[in-house]
Amino acid sequence: MKDMIWPPVRKGDILLSARKRLLSILSLSTGLVGLVSALLSLPVTLDEYPVQSILAIIGPALFFSGPVILDRTGAIKTLSAILIGSIYGMILFQALSIGGAANPVLIYLIGLPVLATFLIGYRSGIVTGALVVLTYGSIYAFNDLIPVSSIPLTRNIIATWNTIVLVLLGLSLTAWAALFQREMERANRRLDDARCEADKANMAKSDLLAHVSHEIRTPMNGILGMAQSLKDTPLSVDQKRQVDLITSSGDMLMAIINDVLDLSKVEAGALELSEREFDLRALVDNACQLHDTAARRKGLTLKPVFGDLPAQRVLGDPHRIAQILNNLISNAVKFTHKGEITVDVGCTGADMVEFRVRDSGDGIDADLAARIFTPFSQASAETSHTHGGTGLGLAICRNLCTLMNGEIELESSPGAGSTFIVRLPLRVVRDETVDPAHSAASAPDTIESENTESGTIRPLHILAADDNETNRLVLSALLQRHPVELSLVEDGKSAVAAWQSGHFDLILMDVRMPVMDGLAATREIRALEKRHHKPATPIIALTANVMKDQIRGYRDIGMDGVLAKPISPDRLDDLLRSVSDKDGRSAPVPKTQSY
Ligand code: ADP
Image 1 (cartoon, rainbow, N blue to C red):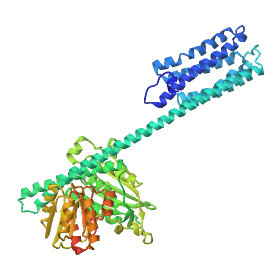
Image 2: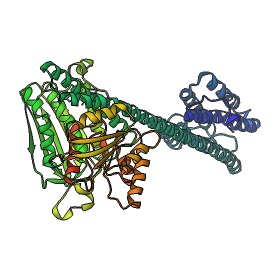
Image 3: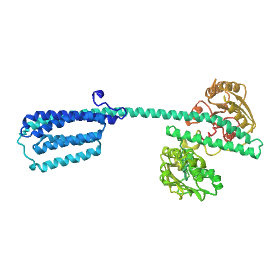
Image 4: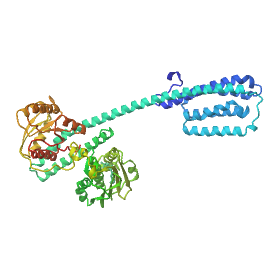
């Protein structure tokens, strides 16, 4: 049917194409119906109404040029308005000169608002509808003023004519509706396809980012790990400053990688929230403490203010809430030169917690405020030179808030400081509502903000498998500080062989390795332990792949925990301490670091 309808349509805009086709059908059918009716009534009307009779033939004939003009100009709205206006004029002229309200041609008027809606838009439809009602009303009201025709408009003629018109109208309406329906279906299908393509592209982008970030983390592991172990050697003041600079630049780079990764994960819908019980006050206190030194260095006071909180413990994702607060507080410290920063926390309704991070800084102008939550928005290009940052932090905050069914907004004006307001639905935990399934202890693969308990590290025999030489060097450098005997191998197969020929307190297992990967090696070791009734050796995945479902996967095949790359010396120490505490019987799950 598509190719039978002329004029041909431009690819892409399906609805415009449908409207063009409708206009063409309408022009042709108006021309046809008008011409047939004019020719049929010509013998009766020609003597008494010669002008009307001729016009009744010329008018419809002109409609045949509609598709040609449309093809040439493409001016669909103008042409539709001209068409509907001419139909209206012709009908009115006919009715006013022959019989007034008794002229059956008036029935055509009903179709005009429908056409205007389809072809121009709903506003034109409403205006045309009002005009038609007004026209009907006026003709009936002033019918006595219209000259009575001497042409016999008998009931029979009217009935026949009306039937023909209605049938034709019905047929064309059905054709239009069918056409429109078909075009809408095609438009929907194309939209679906486009969405699928966009989703695929987004997934590819996320994959690429995840891959790139993984690839960057491995060398970063080398840089940060070696810098850390350099710090433990005797250094001159200058050398120490240089190593500190390497560490802080590395940390900054890691923060940017994590931001980009976070944003792409949220956008791809791949960021999972955890829900567990946590202490809201402690979380806010920690966040303030983290930035306290930086604030003091600038002569600022930074303090939490606890308003009306019914209870301290709430259910939510503490890691992500801390991430939001950290970003807001660090911005407040960055952009405030004197005065104070407060972090107000209170409840604004049942299970609705409000955080207000208020500063006495420069404030934010309306232009930046309007786009501040979109990625890469900064006051000016200079901002990133002066203060660093990528303009991603607030975009991530907004995405995280939305993901938690909350909201974030800004109140600020230049010179008057800024207040970022975060509202999150966090279920307040009363004693009787504590759900053990959600308590911190039963959510081991989430990220802990508290440190594990401290203790001494006893002499340990550790087996580490990693195919990357840098990683092996870093691990040995980091472990040098402890009474540890380290055996290093390069793949899973060698790890299994080494495990069979010795006793180890802990195995650090890279996941991706040639010959045999870390997962297969773990499976084999667990099977051998079972077969020979040996106690389970703690196996910790050593990997940059620390998404929640990946961690779950490691757990499912028998690993006891994850140590994320780049290896944080503190986390490594925590792990060694907990293995020492447990006397090597079984390792608790170490906390994965922020990723
Ligand atoms: P960045 O990593 O650049 O800090 P953000 O998304 O966190 O990215 O912030 C975007 C921009 O918003 C900042 O570069 C700064 O211009 C402005 N901004 C954010 N917080 C404040 C604040 N408290 N006071 C003034 N300007 C701010």
